[in-house]
Structure formats: C-alpha cells, structure tokens
Image (cartoon, rainbow, N blue to C red; front, side):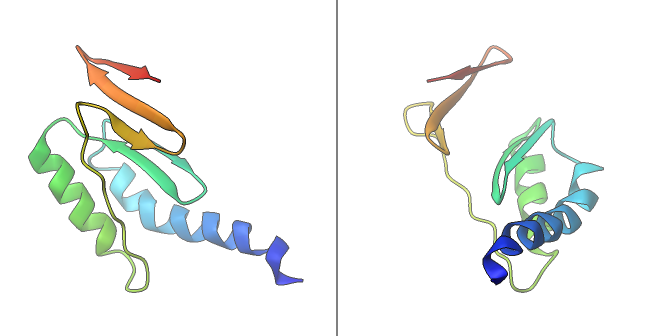
Length: 89
C-alpha cells in the first residue's frame, strides 16, 4: 500500500535538501528521482557543494563518481564535458 507514496516522499525530501544548494553553486543540476547530476565551475565549488548537500540531512548521504577516461557514468548514459558542451553516449 505504501509503495505508491514512496516516490513522492523521496522527491519531496530531495527537493528540501537541494533547494539551499541550488541557490548557491551548481552551474548545472539535474535530478531523476534520487540520482543527481551536478556540474560546478571549479573543483573547489564542486567540493563545497558536495559537502553542503551532505550536511542537509543526517540520514541521507550523497556519493559521487569521478570520470573514467573523461566520461562520467550517470543513469544508463556516459557524459563528457568538452569545450563547454555536454556530450552523451
């Protein structure tokens, strides 16, 4: 019975966590349910944004992946930032 409500609660929780962050750092922020893609202007901004996201809720921890051969896995895609453009495969 509660399964239909779980996605709505997940989205509401994520919205509450991400709103303070969206006002400050990311050049690009996209989310699909609880999977987030975040791009910042500098590595320092990325580290600060990541720390801020993880400080918003005690029971939710964000993880991040580093690019492999300049490609970053996200959902079932590979994303690359090249000359200011996103390439997807």
